[in-house]
Amino acid sequence: MTTSRREFIKKGAFALAGTSFLAACATGTKEAAAVKHLLGLQLYCVRDEMGTDPLGTLKELAKIGYQHVEHAWYRDRKFYGWTPEEFKKILTDLGMTMPSGHTVLAPQHWDETKNDFTDEWKYTIEDAAYMGQQFVISPWMDEAVRKSEDALKKQLEIFNKSGELCKKSGMMFGYHNHDFEFSEKFGDRTLYDIILMETDPNLVMQQLDTGNLYNGGAKALDVITKYPGRFQSMHVKDEIELPEAGEHGKFESTILGKGIVSLKEVVDLGRDNGTIHFIVEQEAYQGKTPLECMKEDYEVMKSWGY
Image 1 (cartoon, rainbow, N blue to C red):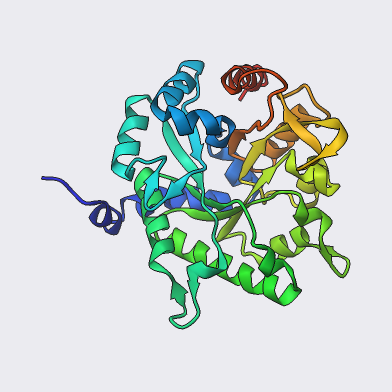
Image 2: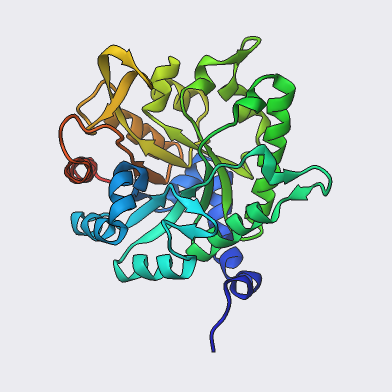
């Protein structure tokens, strides 16, 4: 007899399994640090390969040694074209898990007339729970909600509500930064200051991208020091400065430990302050193939003790 995903979630399996995990994440640095950390890979690093040969790419990543991945493609209740059931089996067969994933929580996912999330967002949470995710992370903030402080705070209220929804399935909702959060301000506060002040740390975790913030004029060491214990997950990313600013700014990512980010110091400080997910991300490759870079990045992280 088979059990449907909805029935499985309703039985509370994930909620029960996640109770101690959520408590550890929300109660501060010592408790969160006691939770075993993991090393993973953001699949956006191999976005083209996942588009043309997703199964072959996952097999190559598993050969390198990656046991955990974070998705960057979920559409119409499918991950990279696979149903949750199919994708979970593929990962399981490869000895992999998916503890987190990126899906944008946009304003249209909140139905003002019903004072509730749309079915689309509820399905997002349901499918994430089925996959065994710990974190459901929104990696972007619509420009419309950044035009005024009131609009931003309204969106952050929705973040908190999403956190409540995720908590029912034993997960946490989260936000992933880019660069604008540190360069855009209302008064003397950056958007990132407002995000961390207006979101409930018991409901909304933060995934700090150690490279993206450089284009916004910030540094990861300063951010972690200012907000200790708020970053349960980290995109481990190094940066090099370009001769001329490109489409995405004057910095681009590179092999871990080869750029200008004091990366070993950053990840160690994160681990000491409650970071438990260390997710490798590299988006530019300086003449190498993405998979070659992923192997080098993996070896660097292992040499650092992760």
